[in-house]
Image (tube, rainbow, N blue to C red):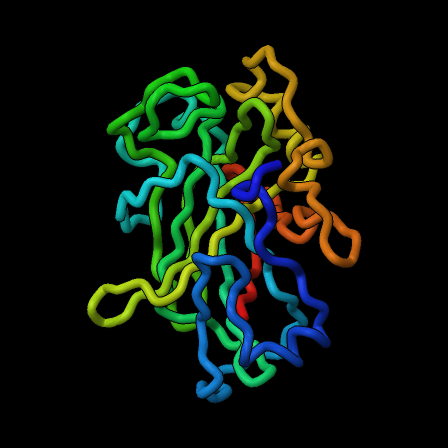
Length: 255
């Protein structure tokens, strides 16, 4: 695995998070802190037991489309998008201030992922995906977190591509009043294998001949934390069935 594919953060224990929280920056050369030592705790702090969310590689498919939208399925009639299983994906964002977790308001959360056929939009043909989708912008977009640190997207359950387990990329960015980026955090989300098995046995996901990679065989998912656990095991979306498909939710905890 090369340097770009390594995990550039790690889960902290709750004790470590409380000890280092107000002074910590994200690991990695491109990461910027979401808070400074001078920031005070907020009256909006919540009592919740969280540990820092680990960072992961951005991967080759991020395009800064600047698409402010909740529905990521709009603008296409592509069968591998419109026939995909509907997924509502909610993020709850928190930052640590003076040892307390506070909802993270006003940050931009970008999401991008493959369609049911394992293809990304707005990408040239390559060794990873044979089809060119340049100029297309489905399954990409961002939302800005509200006062409760929440964003929600309407999308589809992602497919997979050769060498990777089913996953969704996300990026959290903070900008100043002049539009300059002051903080950035990038990671990926995964799904438990029971949910993957149930979804991927159905059309249009089941039309592919290749054998998919499971979480445990994905080198990015299975990279080890300091505590010996796989990093991906801390990035599993909580899911529940809904009348139209699946609802997923994930807490992002940033130092």
